[in-house]
Image (tube, rainbow, N blue to C red; front, side):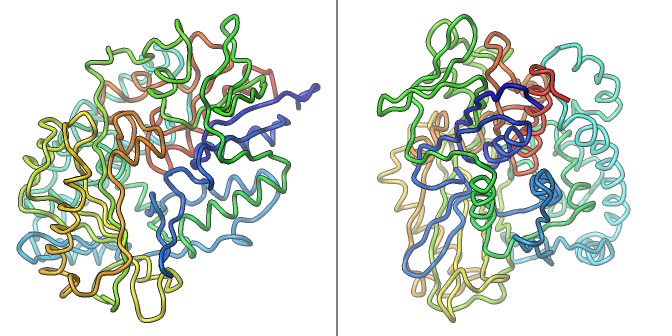
Length: 497
């Protein structure tokens, strides 16, 4: 343990920030967590409107043991505070022609669904899972919680990465195993859940298939907001100081060492360690003085690729839609070309694909009695595109409601109420996300592992990153593992046991 108590500041209260605050608290640091909004959670905050509750961001829970670890730090049991329930199906895919595919916890049930499209792809799916397990054993078990501060750490893994054909994209890997076009779409969408285009994202992210098989897909009763609420209580109980409405204007650096932060009200907070749960590009561009603003990626800024933007529509329905699953992927006819328009051409098209979250399928407290709560996520270009969201936002909302009303949610046009939405502009304004990107930089091969933002700055000896833009990446497992990486780095730097 630390002989002299040192101070740590965590900037941002997303799951990566909360986990880092708890882990450093356990190491003996006096931790202060600063959050620019009036509630904790970052993208995992909660909205309330007219009796409806909405989780604002992450809704798919995998690898719940990573939350369990945070409670175990303080000799507590997660099950005393949170109730994770398994989902079935994990996801329901609704295709443009009305066909559906349920991705289910049982492999045999999933195989029955696969047979509806192509019997020969049952064997292909088995091969996909085997390959995913191989990738998982390297990408998750060996690399996800390991620092990539040194290029040689990356070099040591090259033989394993080549053996796993990590130079392939997720789409190339899936298409090499499956023949049916519908199934190829369904089994290659996982990169979109962490901000990547399946046609450019490294196949390392195919490990998500096995990760889901190993631990399942869950929902926390009360939502991800409930997780944030309980973790906030845990932080307070363990002595972590929490400052809300505290937007960091500048990180103070002296002699290549972070000395503290200046809040926008002018107050300065001193620290021996600073951990950023904020978006790394924003930290370097807006929070650091020259010469520390230099982009820390290997590639120049003009070649850096960011994740897509998100248009997120929240609403309630006056009636229930029991045939809509907890998680639904509503897919347009176009797939590759639509994603190219979003990620590369950066244009807002007439067609779209959607992720639909219906928490009331599992937890009826999200809506008034007899009603449903919905969150619909539509991938769109980020703010590198010239889109007037004041005009396009309402138009896109109407298109989405019309499309759902004509397919899986009959008469939604007449039943929708209490609706509001977020655009990439809101992601930039609320979360200080560069270009309003939904998941920071994109998870392509040249922006992964050592090529991603490092968990520790190369020149500022006590500035760390536990966030989606840093290694290992976005998603709840990613940022929780990022906090574990930071913990290891701090223990090494402060010579702690």
